[in-house]
Image 1 (spheres, rainbow, N blue to C red):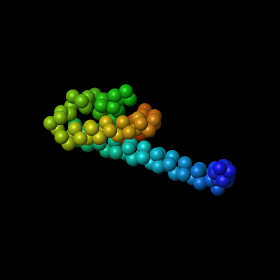
Image 2 (cartoon, rainbow, N blue to C red):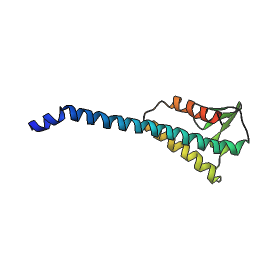
Image 3 (cartoon, rainbow, N blue to C red):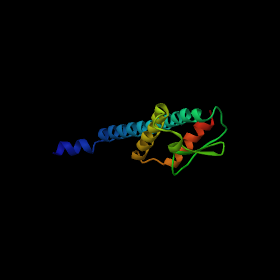
Image 4 (cartoon, one colour):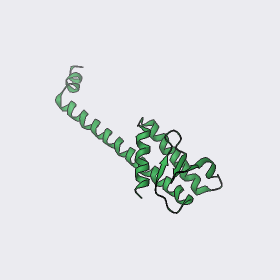
Length: 122
């Protein structure tokens, strides 16, 4: 038992523990960035089905299925029917990715701002 305490409180163990913790946290941040990029790409496919060009996209911060394209509001639930398989898949992917972000306990408003930035830069 004494050897276990010596191991747990050793400097070597502390350094290895901190390295692994840093690795896990950096992977988490990377996965959030990937999710944001993926969400933006799925939105872009839906937006392209609505309009051929746009200047500004705004995503509702309380309901991400509500978007504004150049100040005109669109409800994606109404706009996309289940008969439109490809668009429904994009919307389902957006749902799933936002769910992943919620489980990661990230600031969704900040994520939506980053998604809008990516969409508005294209």
